[in-house]
Amino acid sequence: MPDLSLSTLRAAGEAAGLDAVGIAPATPFESTRGDLERRKAAGLHGGMQFTYRKPERSTDPGQALPGARCLVVGARRYPGPAATAPEPEGRPTARVAAYAGDDHYGALRSGLEAVARVLTDAGCAARVLVDDNALVDREAAYRAGLGWYGKSSNLLLPGQGSWFVLGSVLTDADLPTNAEPVPDGCGACTRCIDGCPTGAIVAPGVVDARRCLAWLVQAIGTFPAEHRVALGDRIYGCDTCQEVCPPNRRAPRSADDAPVPVLDLLASSDEELLARHGRWYIPRRDPAFVRRNALVVLGNVSDGSDPAVAEVLARYLRHHRPMLRAHAVWAARRLGREDLLAHLADDDDPEVRAELERAVVAPRVATR
Image 1: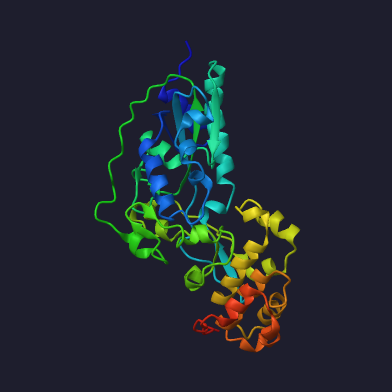
Image 2 (image 1 turned 180 degrees about the vertical axis):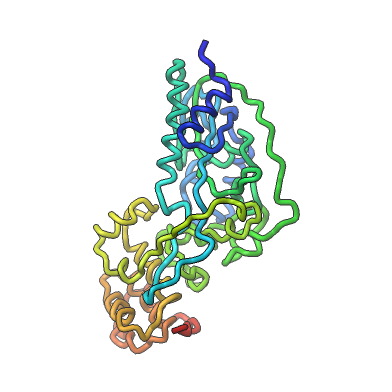
């Protein structure tokens, strides 16, 4: 009879690059479904679909694999952002969240596929789910005894922190599922709550996506004016709640975080932008949303007196997409370049008019 013990499955996963492996029963996540439904009803999902789209599906492993008995859950570490940010070279640059800096989910999938092969070789059904709206992966990992929920809502592995991507193998194999829950390790610490740039962590373990920068850079539509300054130089994702978390201080950090040159991005064609950053989640695969983020970053980090910056602003203030004209208005005002806006006096687009009529944010003072 094939050996399908946890030690065997863990050995297969670790040999293929996983850092932790556990097993959980594939019974429905009833409490998680209730949380999703309540938060969605309260608007805390901010329009996010993913596991919120059909909570009855994303909390029931049996819908992703009929007859599923167990989940083999894997975690793969990725390095946190560099401890010291790279020095800018005179032109504005933007940061990308650490998890998006490389194809960590691809490596996670490879590790889980190695586990799945052990199961299928034994005649069992197996399906790998990675970054998939069919399953709430943090709850699967919690039930498999890999970690506890931090106040940030991230899953933290004991002694290792939260710099991990998570995924599962659903299987009809009857595996040992006696994992003990990992006790809370946060205690009285509230650094993630206190450190969130927009106050998005509204209660321990509860994130209001309408304020979360990591979601807002992926959301469709206008970037909320009240959170643009807080976005700072982030063009994709936000690591702050993890960076301030004490267990993460001991975790490996990236040796080289390559920043994104903002002017180059704004000068790129749609094809070039998608080829370079297509691994990011870009709504509707429409590069305009990445350009929107870049214009906000431009207003936060650049020098309005730089001719190259002024040229990009002038070009986007005449862009055919009203959303981009509107965000260029904000960036120009943020950089004290009201002089570039005169031609918009007759612009009758509602989004542009709303931006022109919005109270002017305090101009950024250049540091060079």
